[in-house]
Length: 72
Image (cartoon, rainbow, N blue to C red; front, top):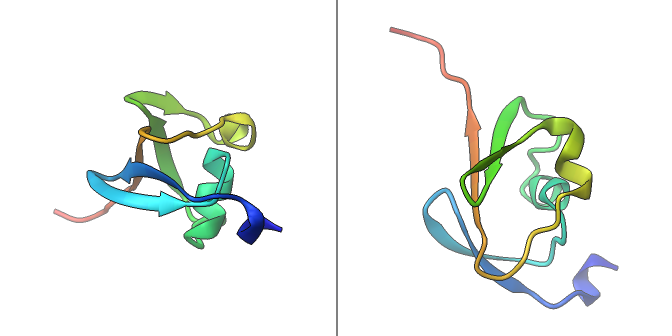
């Protein structure tokens, strides 16, 4: 069903990208990051994990997906 949706263009981690996802959770799922421990932001605003499924994304949005790094 997701393939029936039109693609939209947005920016993910500073790079132009296309997606058929309509929510931030859908975008993570599309990128196989649903189970990953990541932090997300939409247009510069932090989006907590609990709100990703209801946070809609649209053409021209800017999404940041970051994971914690450990080391020194």
